[in-house]
Length: 111
Length: 119
Image (cartoon, rainbow over all chains, first blue to last red; front, side, top):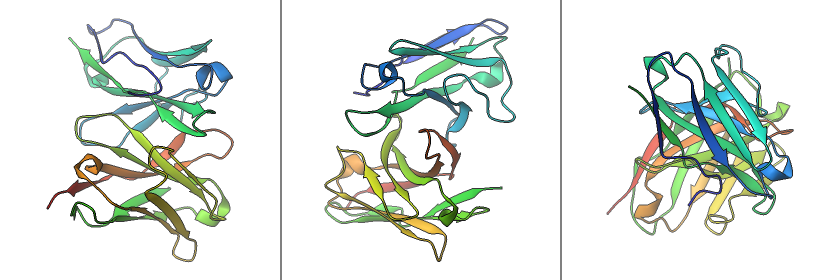
């Protein structure tokens, strides 16, 4: 059971917009700790996609955007492409655990 | 270009100690950042194991704290993970990664190494 809750799967057609959610609590996202997002393809290491709730590392297209409100965060992907099919993980910090916490991950399928 | 590379045995017997090393190139561990370990059981999500600062200060996942030791060797620019009393539940791909001090994200990751616990 992950501290941050993500839907196991999300799907969308090419060109569509999808939103992936990440729900936390008052000891992590709700405590104003930043949320970060990673993209992971099979048999590869996670790649930082969004940091500090809504910032892009160099090279990440602006089709990916992040937001945070209250105890939740979201990753939006616009203009969905086949190459976006991957697992997506949210991550934050939890003051009760005094450590890093991850969501369980969402598998994005491009129909 | 910062690069991290995990190394260590791919097979560990139950009740024994898992030992991995992460060699860092392109950046000096002594210059800052946290250096961490994250694992991913086959077909499952990511689990943070712990972090170490170049001074040796460590932070561990409470669920693993009793079995984990992370250490750093600044002279070799590498850091290590030891997990004792392993069981099949510790079978996972183990990643090392660099983490900013001011916030919690990991910006550079190793490619990962699969460790299987089996007799």
